Length: 167
Image (cartoon, rainbow, N blue to C red):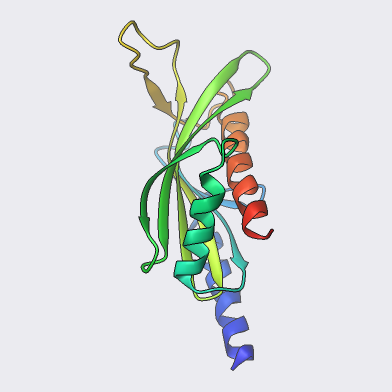
């Protein structure tokens, strides 16, 4: 029985890699648009094996993201359904600037496993206006857009969550 579960986990782990358009260290990147104007839609992390039911994994992720250094705010929790959604905001640096990246961080948990999917990714353009409103543009895969350090910063938030889940 354990052998069958191991094969299933290996198959599930390869599915995103077969469907993606690009790779980023440890992630399958789903993109949209022509090759000269591609935008990052989602970044799927590895499928992690961890003891627990979906509800236990989600509850622990909820505790991890409630910490002051998580750089994420929880939006919704469906512990029994094995899903948690949070919004992450984190600063990043590239050669030309310090910027702010944001994204939706979804924890998808199954029996003894979980995966983090980053979506709705963007980079803030300029400073907030007088009303405090901000404009975020999608992560465009252009050399001058800052998409790589922005995505790396968001993956850093994911990595802190993963580290916490294993403590």
